[in-house]
Length: 427
Image 1: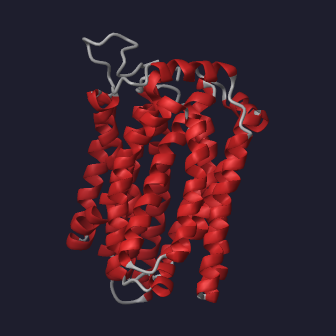
Image 2: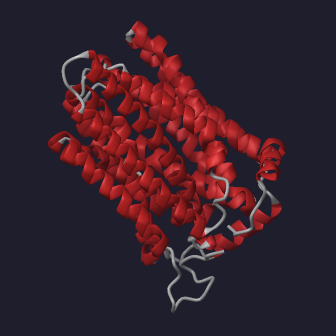
Image 3: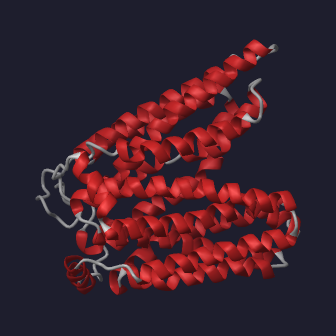
């Protein structure tokens, strides 16, 4: 990417008119509708239809998560060699087969094996798609395009989750298998859209040049990139705050109604859908991206402090419950704003600090950092909020503040490294 600033109205017109971006957005929408369908019913399907215990489901998903962390770099390197589009045309149908395979699982061993395969394809595919966007979308519109795609993805998840309510209401094997079939069809649909994707000639030529040198394995030896990946992964723990810490906190430590958890999720999704593109404006290069992450870290920390207030204000009476609910909702609003900034800043950092000749490998490293945060997130929430209550929220607030504040220093180019070194370019 370059640091060329683009006025938001111009970017808006490009996103509305550019057929490449429209096709990428439609691919994201189709895929995430399927993801929303499956993720909403998956745990109930595993327990009620396959017959696994909740503990075994958790163990299998944890093992799959570890496999997903390890998938990013190998898949990224493969994308550098064979091309991102070509690889996705293979992994998409394979993901469809993996999802359909759940209908034939009847043992814990088969569940673990299939879940690991599906997660490797999913997490590896995410790295490959990121590399595809990096190579196909013009540099000056990269961040805004990714912001648009993230908004579309969240809208797709909402639609899929709403559709899954029908299967949950039926609560039958037939209904759950129907969801699996629909999810598999979305992977096939996304692959069909990808097959018709027209990659600009310049991007195709650059891809050939990158494949010629793809044997260079630089990402795992790029200290600055690894540091940035690790710091941003700490910020990614915000997802576990939403999905693990807040539900448990609302139920166990506040007088707020359990339905508030759904309100928090809706607020978060709506803010991402409506404001992710706007939040990306002004993030044009490495320094502005790092500063956005620093601001986002502070907002995440402020959200944690409000969550802590919700616990300390809990007590008997409707007034305490109302105060706790207000603190949770206010924290979720601020938290979501922090998420918008850290996401937008992370995209630019992952692209601008990468060696353009090995985007697949670099995106694989960055995505593996995110995947590690998602795997470790529930454990971190358990060791902080669940174990220590309000003090745990203070620890999380400190983590978000320090990791965000460290990014501007971490991205500064080394004095001994010239601009344009293989480890990345501050453009």
